Length: 261
Image 1 (tube, helix red, strand yellow):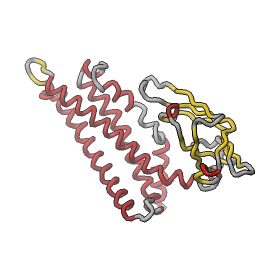
Image 2: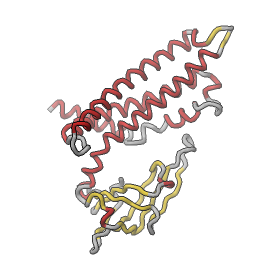
Image 3: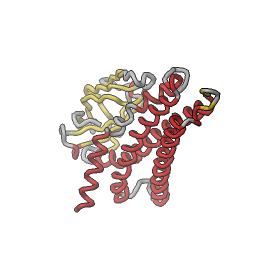
Image 4: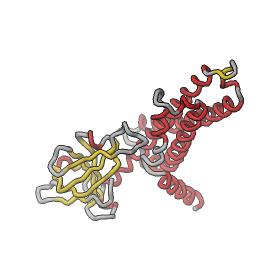
């Protein structure tokens, strides 16, 4: 999605895409992708949705390296007069934004689940290590400076996990009730604030849990012979993916404004 990526409809019903987007997960590896582009720059109400074959002329993708996550393939995609057949125009200009927001809440719920899974991974590493590692012939988890902080991280992760599971259960129930497999518009709109709250809190908590668990593990927590190094790297960028922290805060503040009104 990029408000400066444009789509120009041609006489035969095809579209020419021009623009650039950066930081797409697995972008350099993708054979197909979904592109949102506008017929008028900076006007979201003119957005269209397109299915793009990345082998088409005019499409190029470069890998962008983020040192914290060297194993993730992030892309910078450039489109220069990429011709999209009319049958690959999933949503014509004017309805693309609606299609985008239909799936945005589910994307952020999925991201929140990923973040919490990373927190549980870090907790598992730290719990195993502190139960096995001994100092003065005593398992280090028995020392209050280690065991108590670990239980605090465990409690916070458990409570956020339960909240996430509850929201997911509500979504599943609505999808089962839906005849077309699409969330009811009113429910999806009201869901946005709660999903932003979860995404915001899950990303922040995961960063803290991964770092603190590595700290409790001492040197073993920062070596490359466990997954802790990967977990710390991933957790440091999670607030940016699927909408930055500031975007989530904006959505939440808008929700508070609606409650006031």
